[in-house]
Image (cartoon, rainbow, N blue to C red; front, side, top):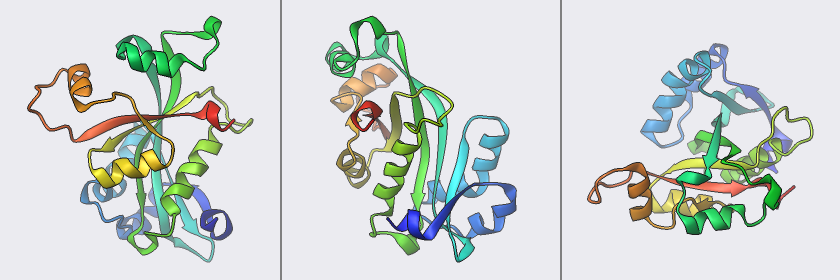
Amino acid sequence: MFLYQNCKIVALTENLVESISKFDCGHADLNDFFRNDSFKYSKELFGKTYCFVLNDNPSEIVCAFTVANDSIKQNQLPSSRKKILTASIPREKIMRSYPAVLIGRLGVSTNFKKQGIGTELLDFIKLWFIDENNKTGCRFIVVDAYNDECVLNFYKKNGFVFMFSTEEQEKNYLKVKTDYKLHTRFLYFDLVLIR
């Protein structure tokens, strides 16, 4: 419980620009987003970025993540996934789309890697959106994760499930050529499992 005991959560604001300029999660694309694009996303209301900073050194960012509103549209899913997705939803509540929150970006500082911080951060996000003080309904957490075995295994280990069982299904959904290499894969987590 490192985050709960040693850190506090803060919204990433331009006041933290110097701290975020030092933040390195070991992934150039994520670093670039947090340093350069996260403020633009927030200004345009596309997403909101938060950081866990150390209590005793608030200029050191342990991890950062961006969340945004999203939904899962069941009419765009293959029949097999639609059945799995709606199996635990009462029949009278079946809708065309289900409220979700998107984890747009997530990174852990290289200074804190291999300590379980990523899993602890996902647990925090899950609990954050089922808290009774949450101001919106949210059934699912979705992520468009890098199509990298290590990243995908991290999300699967934390209870996330592929939205499409194969890359071919996902390519068909995205309407891309079959020889195209997917850079990301869609995964989801059903929050009712922990409520």
